[in-house]
Image 1 (cartoon, rainbow, N blue to C red):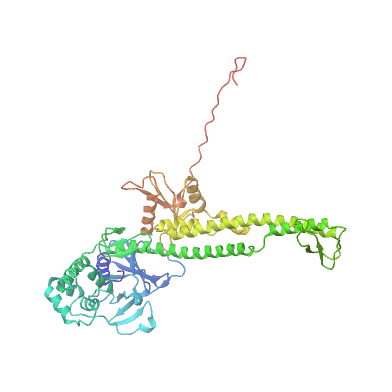
Image 2 (image 1 turned 90 degrees about the vertical axis):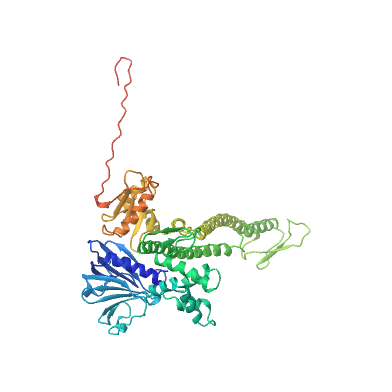
Length: 540
């Protein structure tokens, strides 16, 4: 429901309430297919609106504070900087949100799924665009029109069951019922129609109307929530969750969209890492299994026993036979009555020298067999560990469990170079949680790890967080500045959870830049000077 008309309808109304009378500070893009509109609200607060185009996973969400722009940031439509926003409204008959500015320009966000775009419109013509600007520039701005706004049409149908039945009967019965409903209910998409059919008690016009009325009033006064069922991606909904769903409800659509975007970003980030790790683990498993299979038909122990037998047989035949060419035929002393054995020998060596050579080879092969047993044991141990890590990734049914599996699931085994080992030793092992694409929160695991995180890993401008008045993890927010209010608030929630006061109703969290922290000086321990009486009554 991210780009559903009713989601955008409520989001536009909430944006109007926050932004009308404020200013458009600037527009820029830091990521492909993503636009950031930075506003200053009428009360002087900074608010960013992030719009994602050509992605099924995101639509729009807001973030408080200013964004610290990276070097590859591209400024867009700079002529609109610091223009006042007079109103924000959705088209009465289309998924399009318009920001009307005081200089006559209008920013139109077209939220048409894969064709989402931001257009700059003036006097009925497109003067610029985020996507396909050359193609769209100076073309007429065509807006979908309707005699009656979507919400008004649906309200009339909800209030008049006779009108609903007449409109349904006008449509050809040769068409499937879902298509007829889709064509007669403006603003409804296939998901809403499927929901209507699922809750309707039959196909009669009366049952369909009752189901439609229930859905319409839910859409008019929604209960926005984010459903976070284990093992599934987060889902945004305007409807109250069912009893079996694990969901978080919100007072506003924008709050729900913001929470959904954070959760979806983390979900996609973790699953992208999981795909990479599975590929690495499977490659390592294939390499180890290949090494095991390569030695399957070559048993050094068996070769060692054969060489030792040949050495004994040649020793027993000294003085009775002589080598002929490259072989010698000797009696099989180990199995009397059996046929004689033909043993390969080295030309130029007598039987005694050949026997000594076979004994030497037997010793070498015995050592190879012992080394191979050790290596096979190592390979099987490594394979077991890799299979357990793969199983851990497959069994992770929540982002937290997947995060834990990723932290412990890097391919093991094999020898790393000295440079790699040094790099691994220098990399602090802290718990990490991505807050956004550029911002990551690092969390200490214990008191020693906390000190290493704060005074060894953190940079001066990183943000340090800790629950006030309670023991807990030190947290370092990298990639953010003090004006990133939304990210800091999210990090503070996590810092509170990783403290001894996590079950309290309110947990105050200290937040400052690391450069303002100083190590507490160590207090020397008091020495216990005890006196010992000597034989002459003196004390030592």
